[in-house]
Length: 628
Ligand code: AHR
Image (cartoon, rainbow, N blue to C red; front, side):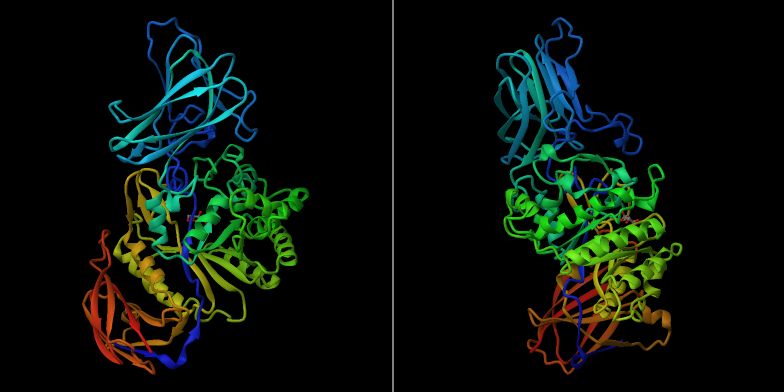
């Protein structure tokens, strides 16, 4: 293959093309990225929160009660779930241990057990009060599977008001599946709520923080933006289930837990403040997505199409308030709340997505138009991202675009989950897009094969397509693979980019493609052509390349994909480009199409104005070249 890069014809492309799409799906938040180790800490699990066939979702879920005086006179109730005088109306349920004549042991099994590392410290906190007179004493322990204590401490509980307790536990041994025990030492009626256990080491040591290994794996993609909190989760499966950002900020006990659309409980402990903080920590633009006043498919969960028109002013105000929360100074109402939460500086919000692959109905259009006009009038500095929905499914895609064009919405969110063949055949998808029209945010895409594996075949189809996104980086502003995270044993959707369990993070081969593009992004595109000895169009599609320049480092970066079953000799010619250093680094991801467990390897290589490079069969090669 002869590959020619034209140095004199650079065009500016988006400097935040590749990012991530976080959705609380597959236990991505609670039990996942959110580092909380106690499951159902708030006793708010409810029967409708069911995941799959789990029959038993209620306030006691993940909790077990043991009594250590079997011969004590039986008490009618030893564990009660009460709602009188709760910590906060948004968090009405709490546990009451009736331990007048029995020592009780309330045990939480975490999310598939609690993963404990020797020597690490864990922050335990809970609210407690003695109902009645006198003081109580509780002993807390982390225990391994056979019941051996790995850390313990005792704490006094006073009667009267709810009091927050804080304890530090240091583990003396590793345990992959530990439990947390809270045991009564003295008789009394103990009320307990918001029982929380965090590793002291979270990502960037943030309180109420994120699991360090998972967060770091996301950071290592070098994402230039992060979309959150969904996906379908953002617009919910019914108007009552629409994700409301205001219910996700402030003290944890005041946040409103909710069953999510994917069929499990979300504490909202990972809420908007934490999302913004994480974006800042990894230097990604925050891209919140808010429902367009309609729920998923505009009718799920009871048939109501959207937020009642009489409630739309308040709905719109909530979105305007979000901008104030993110960017307002501490003298504004919502800016003050951010400052009080610990972040006086603004979060520099620039984008808001309105809607998520909604059905384009009159109900949608009316509400979207209201929101868009209000945002544009009050916050012209914010780029609103409209929605065109999934490509190729009905007419919503075209109808969505018509609204975007009519209202001159500056950007539109497109989604597609297609076969690898579709991605190879559609590498010119954006070549003909109007450069004067709305920019594109390709908010969700992934190549799917039957059985939905993550393997090199789908990953290379995505890589091929990503070279076309770079070529079209003047019209495609952002793109994110979807979904991002999946907890093993708890997936509602496959494939995903990163799988994990309590102790391990397992990036997929698709992850490494995203990482190679994220870590080797540029802000200028240089036209690159490929001449092959074969004139077959099909073979041409299988050797796509792109060349970008990163103005910050001054590097030229070549991405060379080979989806042919044989090694290909590439003769690279850099026209009008002066190479600054003939030593370069080449990173290669290659294997067989079925391979699921591959990692990129790096090699030194020699480059020049003209050089040759072998592209292995089924590979993505990235070469970073210092230029003058
Ligand atoms: O990414 C998974 C789901 O796919 C998203 O929630 C939704 O927007 C799309 O249908």
